[in-house]
Image 1 (cartoon, helix red, strand yellow):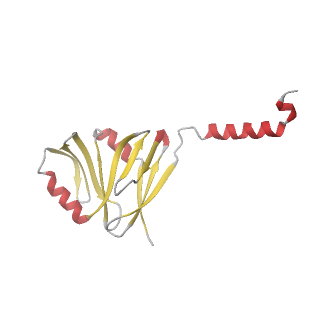
Image 2 (cartoon, one colour):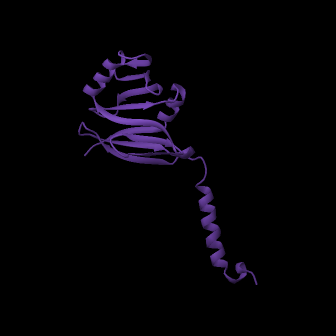
Image 3 (cartoon, helix red, strand yellow):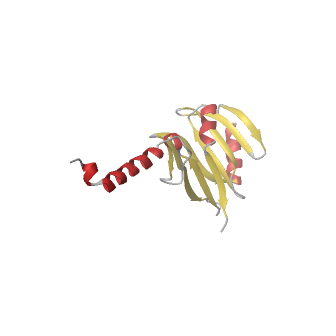
Length: 154
């Protein structure tokens, strides 16, 4: 006599777990969130669409966004004063500005390991995102579009 006939409940339970596992393997959006205490005193919630093997972690003051095991983007949270210092420093190195507005800048600058694409824009009342990657602009935009930022009010 087969195990299915002896223990039909066990078979159905195993089958149900297997089906639920498969259902979770799709390309659906599955967010992952971190709440980051910024140096400005604000707390910023970072949510990442983790489909396509994306995940993030915060091993120190920088949030790392990975696809599988490759670092795709590094995020730091800075004050307006720090953002202004970074904007001033851009002209001291080879650079190309992709887009610039009062409250947003994306640019590429030469680094020791090649060109780095940077982004700076506000994500709180006093907190700015400072993100960098070695990805080309189009690929970097796609990774950045997976992230959402929200100031957490106490």
